Length: 492
Image 1 (cartoon, rainbow, N blue to C red):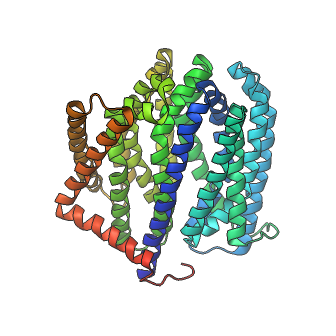
Image 2: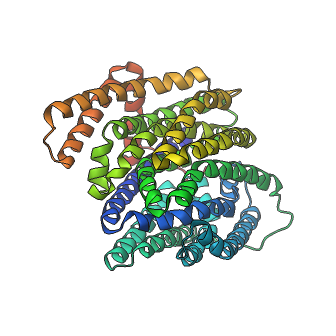
Image 3: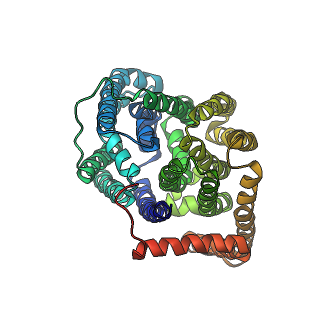
């Protein structure tokens, strides 16, 4: 268990470091591209990716998670899963190409036919790297995963910025969308040096396919419920409207998705190895949950209170219509900070059917909310999204924790300290900026606002003995792993 703890802390440190780099890369590329391109350029690509994301979930079929979650796995099984993934990738790319004229007609935008066909390549590139990435995650080789993801994103970002400066418009965004999965897959193959063998008909993958299929169905429902807003806005309000809504959504999504990706991979691997030790699983989960909350809840308050400065600094003056959308979307950060860790808990213990049932309940409610909000434009849809997600939060906690090592009270006790600290820090930051920074330039004012918020937040968390011990312990473990004080085994 000490080895697992070491690898978990070391992996967490590597993934958080990588996701920090990824965050700044994505944020930097967004800042630059938002000034080189307009809302319609982003909107055109956003129209297609709302559809391609559905197929992207299908090409994996949940088999990467099945590879990681399984206690033992053979080379024949992984090889068979690889060819299943490749088959799905090729078929789905073909479906995407075939549907490209219909997608263009749906949005009344002829340019989307060619865009859709090119983006289909990303499905094949991703499919070729699914099992290689899963093997790296299973072996908890998070440093390799981190370097590959950052390198691929960096290459894609440079290509997009170069294309935008050269006048290629939305095609620079398309090029980035295809380059990143290609770079990731190339890196995964080089890092694992694993070459798949022939598929085997009786390799014992039936239970894994069932696990992956259930997880994929859940992912499709979640994706549909989280992206139908963009489809409706694009259909009824056009590319400029979805460009504005999409950039506000991206500002919300970049930090939360990066953090969930980093913490989720590590937590899923560690919790999957502790299925027979409920007490230790509970301890690992609550520590990871606390870390996620501490890193995301200040963002909720910051985006809510300082939305105008965030948009002005990060996107530029021509995007100011996105400010109210950002404010209305900000509460969803809190919801996903709670919901995502609970999904790790259920998935790592194989309870994917419960996740699917939960998704079957929330998906139609969210889509109904979007339908009610869409006549009022992007702001109306953002209001509906946040409203439904906030109302869903408490039923979600009760349903997800039922029969597990975690109780609703555990969740509330973990959420309250960082939430209260964020609120207090936000109030002081808002008051400070109102008194001292009225005439400041946006960059200086935002720096002051965020500086006060995070300083007060950190100080408040350190007041409580339990919170101080928790975060200092996590920091100490990361530093020890970074210095190599604990020898890590080659595999778990």
